[in-house]
Length: 481
Length: 92
Ligand SMILES: [Zn+2]
Image (cartoon, rainbow over all chains, first blue to last red; front, side):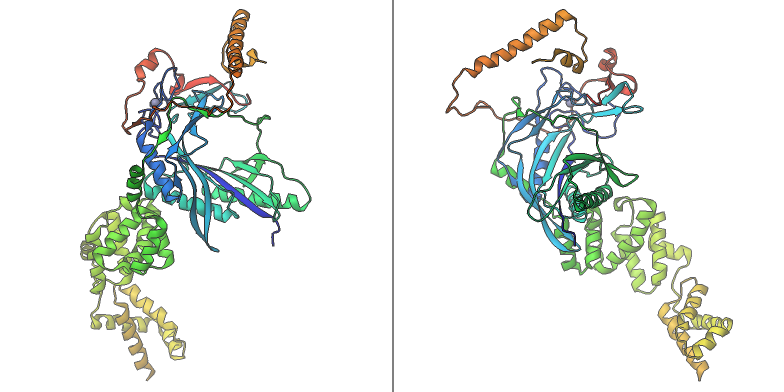
């Protein structure tokens, strides 16, 4: 037993997927040429005034409601002051005393069961620009700034230090990302900076408060998990040796999997928050919130549970399929059209997923629609193709876009059900494998599988396996007598 | 109290001694105004941040043109690669 209990808190910045920035009409598109989406407002030029984006408010409320938070009918904007060149105004407009959403939770499922992770607040704020340092960070004389990101809307979600393991933190983030994607409020792509996460962790014995350590430079969920595991181990060892941990910010090194102390400013930051005089309080009326509430889609966990109930899917399949809304929608439309949810789930999670992974495509990029799926399943049911051939047909159809029927005709993949034809091949196989036959006769019945395999090989998988098995057994029994 | 040299450095300005003195004077004067305000008795007065009539106007999420490329080029605002270039800032 580990006598020290970890306490983990997360601060997640989610980029809201609006067309324009939070306070100006500049496009918030990612990946454009530097400084092509800038205007006096997001450059902080004198006299420019911020005007709040309605969509960002709507998205913030959507996310807040989904995280079971209270939406504050009156929230205010503040200026958070600090001096950095990628922050042209010298302050960031954010929410401080009363955020748009407060006090909620997200229920996660881990191997140990379900657990509610409490969320303290969710507030809307603007992003800063992006600094690029060429060469050695300590030596270069200049920094370069791209203000395309300056003013892009973010929602910051702050959890209570409620998380107890690296595993839980990981599950929380996976579910949160799934949720923002379901809602359509953010792409949640970490590599594009649309989801950023800082973590803090402290270890303590039952009743005492531990010393908080913050970790930065976490670029993937895997890194977060690894950094937390490392940090929990490091702090445990220190405490066991009677050493004290210090309040600090540490940097995660992706290569070594270790955290290292960060060179930080000596003085504690004082952001001198004060109310943003250019923006009166954000007042929301009940109907506005109600309308958004009514427009919320079914969420990942609800969908997963419904799939298990409605389509009798296994827990694992339901979880996988509900992990992306595109995949779930695809599954559901095909399941309804074919009336065969289990078969659809099997092929979807089998051959189709394998194809998607290999080609790095997503479900929306493939052309295997309801019509093709119905045709495919009917070929299988009518016994025109065998199960083994079915996989080949599906892959070929995904590759070429041809209909399953056409593939079966063109490639001559029709299942052989003619007993005379199969009998002929069975006799051939028995003749060519006398050793296997004698072993079977000596009681080693598992050889049957090998012989059946030979029959399938000779027919290129086209022989009906049941018939082949039946004829094979009959032939062998005849020899026995 | 006011470190004018630090402000000069942070703002990437080059000031003459005379200008430093003038700015310092202005800044001190501004701070002095607050000293005057401190004399007002604000006991039992609720802080008022916004005027009562003020109402937040929301904007539709529709893209508008910002600064155009030609203007930026004309003013030679941008450095190579279309970036704004600043004195490097780590450690300040
Ligand atoms: Zn702008």
